[in-house]
Length: 115
Image (cartoon, rainbow, N blue to C red; front, side):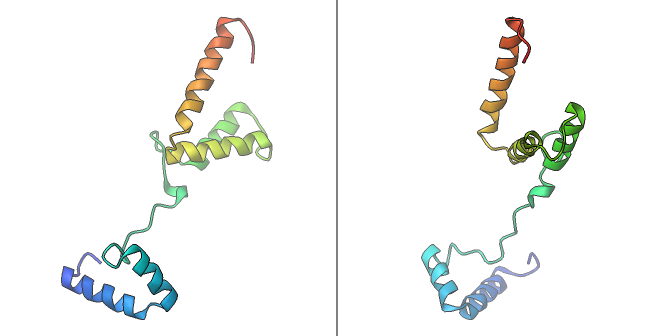
């Protein structure tokens, strides 16, 4: 859509709006015609999102499972996969969990306990 002029984009937008079903038109009216962006680019699929190392959540999970020698079908592996997705998506709730795990590991080492 980058080759169209703003006037042509507006013309296309108006044409699309007029062709909408009444139900979809009510949705557009609710958010506001000016706010409606029919040409918005889609979000990256989660499979293409990468963490700061350049790995996808799938790659992180596979590497983790391989390194800790856990069955892929276990509940443990499923939880690790979910955590990998949250990590790659950079959810804010991942950081406190990570920090707590590091802290707890250090606490156990300091007290001479084995997890």
